Length: 249
Image (cartoon, rainbow, N blue to C red; front, side, top):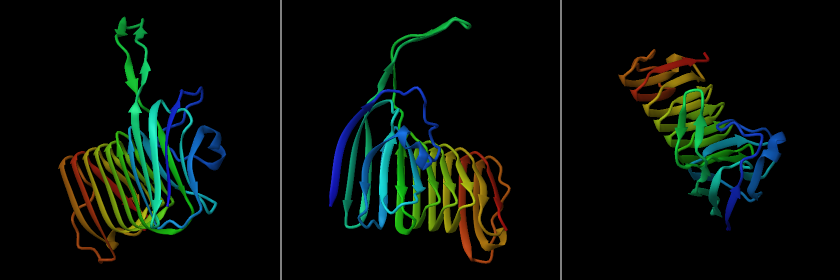
C-alpha cells in the first residue's frame, strides 16, 4: 500500500494551462508531480473538487499523477494504492483571493475580493486494459484520451465530459451542467446523460450496429430509437439540449 497526503499552494504563473486539454510529455514544466508508481494497478478511481481532471495514455510503464504548476488556491492531495486500486482524492481547501476589478470603458467596478480555485489533475496511465477507470469532478471538466478499461465511468457536476479515442465495454458519462463530446471512442454499451448541455461528436462503428434509446425533452436529436443489430447499445438522454451524433462507418 502506498499513501501520500500533501498540501500545495501554487501562485499563478505567467504562462497558463489551457484547462481541459491533454498535456504532452514535453509540458512537464507546467505540472507538479504529486505521485508516481510502477506497482501493478488494475483500476483507477479519482474524485476531484474545483479542478479539471484528465486521464491520458503515457509512453512509459509508470502511473503519474500531476497537478497544474499554476494552480490557483490551496489543495490537498490524498493518493492511495491498495489491492491494485489507485484512489486519487483532491480537495480545494481555500481559494485564491482576487482584488476588485475596475473596467473604465463601461464604468463598472466589481467590489470585494473574489475567491478563485483553478487546477488541473492529470493522471497518466501505461497502455493496458484496466478493469475500471472512474472519474468524478465537482466543478470541473473531465477528459479521457486513448485509455482503455472494461468500465469507463465519468461524472461531472459542472463541466464538460470528453471522450477521445477511448475503448471500453461499458462507457458511462454524466454531467449536470455541461456537454458530452465524443471523438471516435469505441464502446459496446453507452450510457450518456446531461441535464443542461448537448451530446455531440462521432462514435466508432456504424449506426446499424447500435440498439439506440434516445430522449431529448427540450431540444432536438438527429437520432431516433432503433433495434439495431445488437452488436452495441447506446442510451443517450438530454433534458435541456440537443443530440448530434455521427458514426465512423
